[in-house]
Length: 491
Image 1 (cartoon, one colour):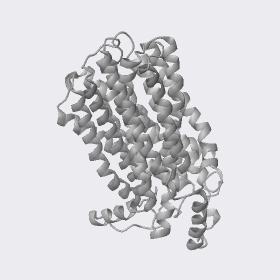
Image 2 (cartoon, rainbow, N blue to C red):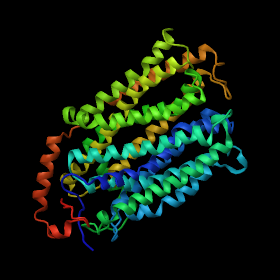
Image 3 (cartoon, one colour):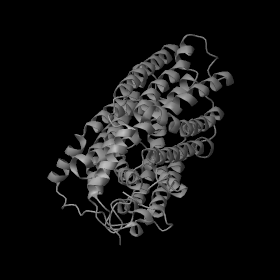
Image 4 (cartoon, helix red, strand yellow):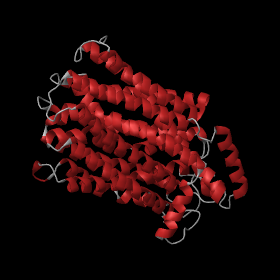
C-alpha cells in the first residue's frame, strides 16, 4: 500500500469532479430539510411554538458546531490503509439515515418535547458532520490548483443544491400535494424516508468511487489522541489570520443564508401568496440560479479573485433580493398571487440567489488555501480541522439565522395556522421591513471581511513552490503516484 499525499496534478478528470460532488447531495438533503421545512413542520403541522422550535434548532446547531472541530481533528488523525477520510464516510451514513427518518416521523405523530427535539436534531447534525467534514476535506487532498479547487467546490455546491431542490420538488409534487400541501403529516413522513435513502447512497457512493485515489496510508502517523493535544492543535489552526478573516465574513454570510432559507416559506405563502402550482416552480428557479452560478463563478474568480468575488456577490445578492419587497411596500408591484407578481419575484430571486451562492462558493474555496498557509507555518496539514472550523462558523451562523427568523415571525405577529391572503397588512409590513433590514446589514458585514481575505492567487502559487522545495524529491517516484487510470498524482 503506497503512502503519501494523493494530490492530482493538472486538470481533474470529469469522473473525479462528479464523484466529489455527489457526496454533497446528503448535505443538500439535510440543509433543505432543516432550512425550508423543519420549522414550518414543527410549528404549523405539529403545533409547536415557532420561537421554541427555532431555539431548539439553534441549541442543536451550537452543540454540533462545538463538536465539529473535534471531528475534524479526529479525521486528520485517522491513520488507516484507506487514508484519513474514507473510514468516516463508510461508517456514518447508515445511522444518519435512520435518525433522519425519526426526525420526520415523531412517535405517535405528535410534537416531541423541547428536549426531545434538541436531542434528535443534535444526533442528526453530528452524523451529518461525520460525513461532510471528511468529504469536503478531500478537496485539498485531491488537488492543489487554485482554479481546480474552485471547480470541485462548484460541483459540490451544484450537487448539493440538486439534492436539496430535488427533495423540494418531490415535496411539492409527490409527498405534499393537494389541498393540505405543506401541512400534511403523512407527506413529511414520506419526505423523511426518501431523503434518508438518498443521503446514504450519496455518501457511500462518492466514497467508493474516490476510494482508488485516496485509499492510502497518510505520509505521517499522528501521535495518540488526547483531548489536551486535540484542543491545542485546533486552537493553533484557528489562530491562522486568514481563517479568522474568513470566519468573520462567513459568519455574517451564513446567518443571512440561514435566515433567508428558513423564512422563505413564510414569505412565499404569506407575502407573495404563491399557489401550490406556483410553488412547484420555486425550486426550479433556484436550480436555474445555481446553474447560473456554475457558469459565472469561474470568470469572476479569474477577474476579481476569490475574495473580490465573494464580497461583491454578497452585496449584490442582498440588494437585488430586497427590490421586490420595496416595490411591493411602495404600491408599485402587481397583486401578490398573480402570474405577473410571481414571475417578477422569481426573476429577481434568480439573480439574487445566483450571486448569493457565488459568494458562498468563493468563501468556501478560499478555505482550501488556508491549508497550505498553515502547513508552511507549522509543517502540518489540518484539512479536517479547518473545514470543521468552517462548519462551526456555518452551523453557528445558520442556527442564528433560523433563530432570527423565529424572532422576526414573533415580532411581526404572524399567528400559527395563518391563512395566506388573510394576514393583516401591518403584520406583512413588519415582516418585510425587519427581514430587509437584517439582510442588508448582514450582507454589508460579510462583504467587509471577505474582501480582506489575505491569500491571493499569486501568493498561493508562490507558497506551493516554497512547500515543494521544502519537501524535496518525492521518494515514492512517479510510478507510485499514478491512479489506476494513469493520471499523475503529485504534491
